Image 1 (spheres, rainbow over the protein chains, first blue to last red):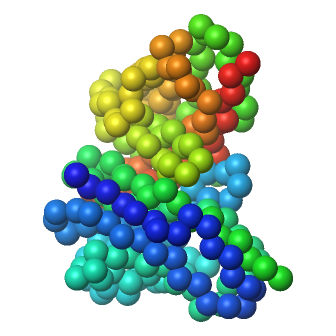
Image 2 (cartoon, helix red, strand yellow):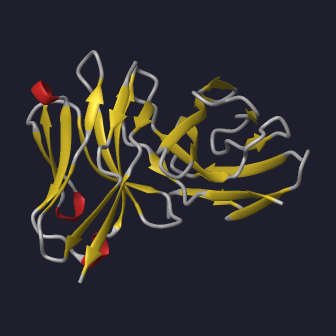
Length: 113
Length: 113
């Protein structure tokens, strides 16, 4: 069965430091992969997505993610974190052809001044 | 502005009561989705609809019901059969054409009195 694992439940980084959030997936075919961000008490906003082609994907707010098929990973990165990046981040994989998404458990990012 | 609206923001349910969560979109999207979010569990799919007058169960449909009589609307009823309804409920929509982005509403938090 398809699944998504985000190994880190909570991460704290200093403002200006680099960030990497991990995501591992289990999917038999070529995956459709997404990263969403959620501010407290709000809905989700798409940061970026990977369907095919270049394995390094650029998103909004200065985020990027790299698809590594050999490692079944789709890690999210940002070179310099801002205090406004504090939020919960979800990795998701598209399941079948129905538009269904399977989400990871989420990683909460805290940014220290 | 185009988007997804959910109401109410907070909803209180008494024991044995059915409650209905509203989801409306003006994006002209064919597909709509309902997710339940619990701390540490990510988002789980309750029901989804790819077209008017048709919908399918997701992974945790027991205790919930939906209707899709209009393209713009996809209300979710939490029935008395749902024994643990306290959660954050998110509605989403997409064009339904392949793997297009799902756009999320701001969510409804359901609490049990």
